Image (cartoon, rainbow, N blue to C red):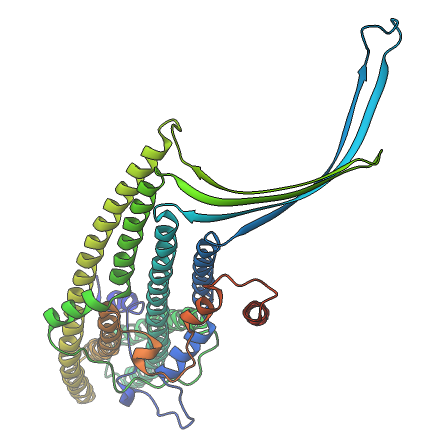
Length: 475
């Protein structure tokens, strides 16, 4: 692969405007990465989706609590009874028709008194599911912010590449004019001019590719941040992990949302196992009934009521209860395995992130020196060509080496920033709170506190909940 072909493909890689000396300084105020991260957090549809899923999990707690309260249902109906009656002493045609229409209304109430803890296990499992879903939301937040970092850096990178390509094109056009002038006086041949023309054409193609990459980067920025990019400032201070890679791995196992979510899910599975075992035992319920019947075709009526305690339990259900208990145990084993895998994956992610960061830092240091050396070589080659000691091809090759070195430095600077934030994400600390972005954050406990007691609409808490729901519907 030629150097120019390699550079064209490198345009799709990572970059950063760390080489600000290569581009003109913008006077207008530039927005920072923190600004972009705040907007990404506020505008993310993915976060809104997972917040709604968390609110749905909160409602599972309300439903589990409601199952422990009195349950009252009403019934109403109209019954039409009809038939024909014939007595033994009546003539053959002496049968008579009878019909009666009755209206009924009734109330049925029940209250669970004791079920060997099954309802309590299910309620606690619902609460643990809420906590696991909160960790899922935090994991999504990290993904949203890391994607925002990448989108921010991609715009800066591709803007730098466009500037670099434009400067390169201008330089090559000057070289072409110089080659034509030297050809006119007989200092160079037509071959030198053709080489310069080919270099200009290739630079024009590279500029078109870079502009296309910039357009795509801007679209990615809109998707990740929720708006168009303005004048972007290259990040200065970057988050730096405390300690070495082993310390970071230990911190990640304690803090990463994927690990914490897996731990909560293990607890949920264990509670479901206990609930499945309790389902084989009887339950004790307080049951009450009130009813009234009224004959619509006559004057008869009846009023009735009852209250009692019922003890019921399964005897045989075709093996279903035992199957549910075995299923709950298998799900617990699966969650334990998932927790183990989550720990391994998080440790690996931390190790990979640290390795990428060290490699990016080393590459940046090397490419700074490469740019310096390539610039000296290019300037020297051009001066020698003006004295006749170098050919046009030598100048073009030196300029291409400088271009590649500058592009590599842009990429290396971008790699450092993205790798630094990837380390933070691998540990589990890439959230708006950990980054101190100063943006109002979503409180995952606020909605839970409103619904955890399963309020009815007519209660003060239920009315407050209605106001919250109306506000959410307007977002």
